[in-house]
Image 1 (tube, rainbow, N blue to C red):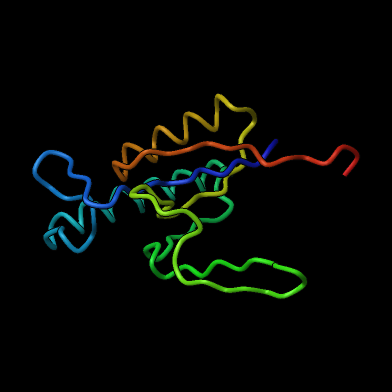
Image 2 (tube, rainbow, N blue to C red):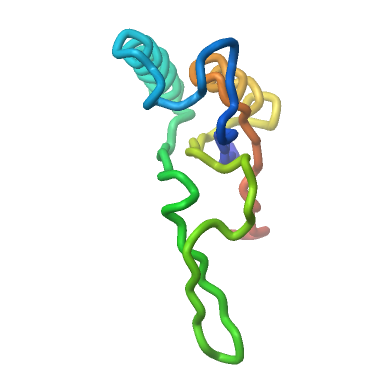
Length: 127
């Protein structure tokens, strides 16, 4: 079994239908429905043994970039790359193969209505 990173993306200012994609714009009822979908999905992942870890990230303006320059560390505020699209959160899952990971990604898309990028973890030979 391999591990996969399911990166959830948000696009600043993106609108699906008439609703902006951001929790602050949701009504309490919409937030409750959203959380019920996510909770059900995560329960299904846990029951199947696919779930490893999940996390939601702060908006990109909370990021700090650390670089090395001539042996010194330089830290700057903000994301590494200026972009309207950013990683909003992630799941790390166990899956038998890419097809199984993609199936889980489809369920995440259905639950949260954000695009998902699926990336396998590199497995060291002999490790």
